[in-house]
Image 1 (cartoon, helix red, strand yellow):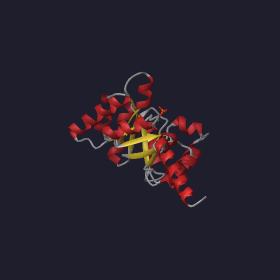
Image 2 (cartoon, protein in one colour):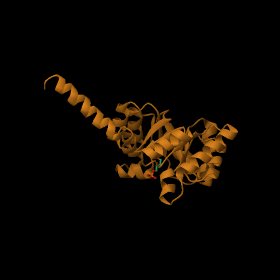
Image 3 (spheres, protein in one colour):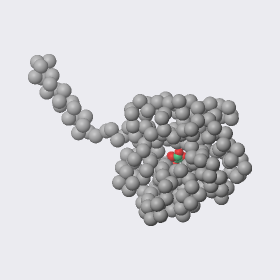
Image 4 (cartoon, protein in one colour):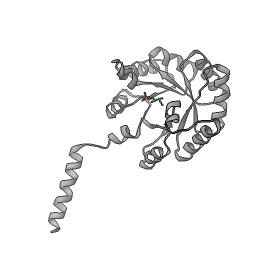
Length: 219
Ligand code: E4P
């Protein structure tokens, strides 16, 4: 399963890249705003900076919600770097735009997906990735991982090549749940990725090893 980091923060992206387990980056307008990135030139330059840090795909979301606007924005984003994936919301004009981009060989990530039906449409339009938001479904007491299972079944039934990019991931249980189901990608905050590191028995076991070593060395 590929690990994408879900942030526009360059320091966190670099920390994840240096860890050696990072396969890509996802951003969205809220994550960009959180970093204070605004204005066309600043936005484009920030995506360029992200592409210089990572080796894998970088999702850059369009702001337009009309077909023509999405195409114009998406082509400008795609021209920045081959790593750029144009992120498009699951709305009617977004499905049309994904079809256009897929025919042009431009990678796409269909975002704000909350149902298997939406995921089916994204795959039929030729999306490179589909982003079901599991955390936000959990927030309304709907099992987000069940949606990943549904999409995995449907995509496998018909051999769709669209990759399931589990989004709105909040913690290690989401990551492991996605891995057990067979999501192609998970995108989460650095905290969720680092939470996989931690187990109390690892910490206590290492402490005991070091203490025993020190004792034997007469320290
Ligand atoms: C993908 O990048 C999504 O926009 C992101 O995972 C949403 O996460 P959130 O539900 O925590 O805002």
